[in-house]
Length: 150
Image 1 (cartoon, rainbow, N blue to C red):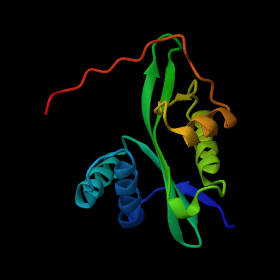
Image 2 (cartoon, rainbow, N blue to C red; image 1 turned 135 degrees about the horizontal axis):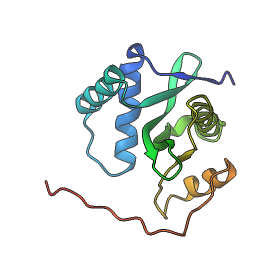
Image 3 (cartoon, helix red, strand yellow; image 1 turned 90 degrees about the vertical axis):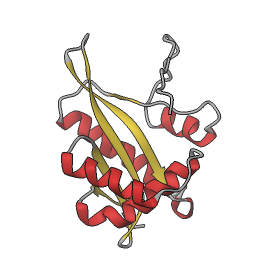
Image 4 (tube, rainbow, N blue to C red; image 1 turned 180 degrees about the horizontal axis):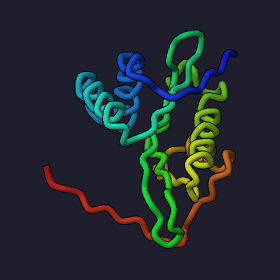
């Protein structure tokens, strides 16, 4: 397998948007390909996230998107690994781990203190993947969300 993990560019937008739309549908959101393309185009243009893509034989098969945060107590940048997705035909081939390794490289090169992520308790695959990639489950805090009503 030719495993190429690289930073996403505007040239990737069409294929990346398709993957992003599939990712959103995996999380029970309605398909919105044009919205996905607009959202990702803004991220790439404004450079307010880091997006890495997994490419296999010239076709994008997965991506990860990280957002910068800061840790006040550590006084350093921290990364939120917000999105990780590999299409169903390419799973089990090491792309997810390779994308995570590229995210770790970003942490090192940006002099950050690390990254964190959140995944559903029912995400069996993710809950096996992340510990095997060196993530530690953190049970010492409660995670809360406040959501705007639509």
